[in-house]
Image 1: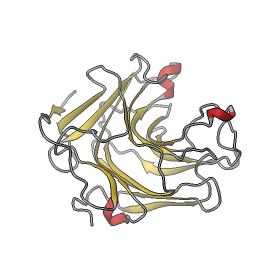
Image 2: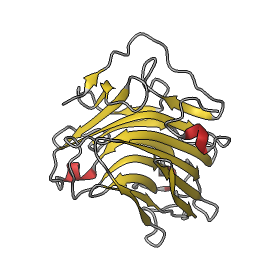
Image 3: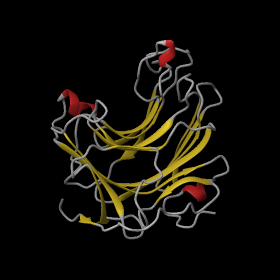
Image 4: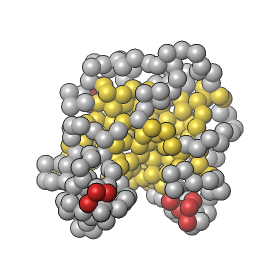
Length: 266
């Protein structure tokens, strides 16, 4: 694990929410990490999820995620992910985090992976089957890519090709922290919106649909998921990222409340 240092975080209570505008906040500075998260999909092997003292974005601790090509399946995929919040109840939401990509653990690959996704439960009662998330943040050949689209049909098999957009957000520079803030109006209609800030600069303002026409609205997952590890297409054998200062904001939140580097939300 190179210069990674495992942190001792046992024995204290969960962190308090710093603001009435935040629905979730995890800085890893106190308590049992992700104790208020909606779900954990990391498997039970010792490398999948650890809490470390180096590197960190702010404070003294961060989370380290790892997946390996030869690992067992987790929920039918090669993943180490946290479902931070379940299906949202208001289509106006904010999300943010800081991410670090180590040069020795995130070697450039020709096959992409997901580092966060807005995933919806299919309408199984209507015969709908599971599909890829309508909107996700991916890494493709060492570039950040916002993959977004929609489908307004009540029963669908994925986003419509004419709606899909793959928006390049810049290079994945290694051994440094990247700050991301997302502002959503979750919708499969023209009122939808995705705004993205990367390292303090607004890089996307995408209007229009960004989800499926399903009974359940999106839940937010963060971590690592790589389909190419399951299909054996990838030339690399592992993926490692670090995450810190993870937040979910409600409809009253602002960019200032959400910026990962802002330790005191308003």
